[in-house]
Image (cartoon, rainbow, N blue to C red; front, side):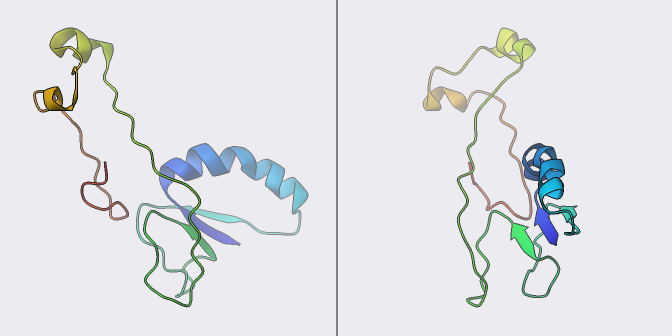
Length: 109
């Protein structure tokens, strides 16, 4: 079984559970592809692909597993130097890191 998944979910969600899964499914070969690139299940690049975008092909089964949550954070050094925004209108005066990826829609915050 080839499973394509983003690096964060693969490392922190799948890998810790993989040993127990392999004990239960001893005869199943499991290949984990951690990638931030789109993996096309229809072209057999993987058997299962966990990604942020729904595939455009109507012949593929797509199930929503959950939601992507974003939590703002700052280091203690940053907070000491610039403070904490009091609200969204105050956030424009702070430095914000924007994550970009081929799998994330632009502005998905």
